[in-house]
Length: 185
View 1 (cartoon, helix red, strand yellow):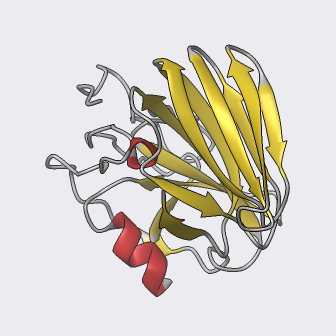
View 2 (cartoon, rainbow, N blue to C red):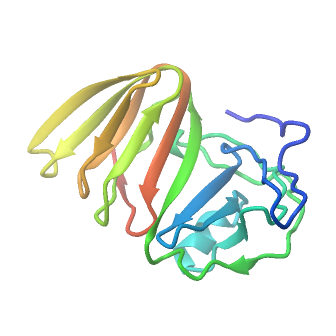
View 3 (tube, rainbow, N blue to C red):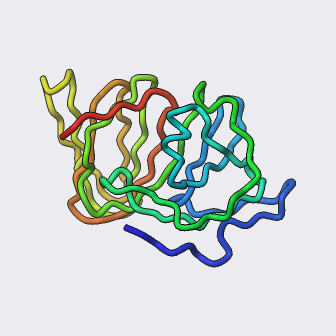
């Protein structure tokens, strides 16, 4: 689902000022060293991430957010609709240790299974109602867990999983940065 950027979002005074942004339009990278950086979601984001060249903005660094939302998790893409280019440096720890924090508005079931072999994933339903399906041992045993507003599930490392939508809503993910894998439903 697309949303227009909210007025006043994505602006910062720089330096020690707090950075405001829309989590649907921007990932946050939480590094193992305690630092955070924002990663605006542009058309090239996934290609940059896969190549190890994703661009980040240190928290407080003045990122703007004018991308689209939508739901890579819901089978769409978070295509950029003319985000203003930013001076940014490659975040050196992006493919090392850390976590991505992201939010999606989900109206449709996830189009693929995914797993994270390098760490557990936290899934938090902020609104709506979902079913989280865990596929243990590559189809040997499936577990269906209800996930309603303010509910959460910790998905074990290496476990295939996907969300189905009972009632559309917002889901927050905290995901290891390395090793995401996908397979068809």
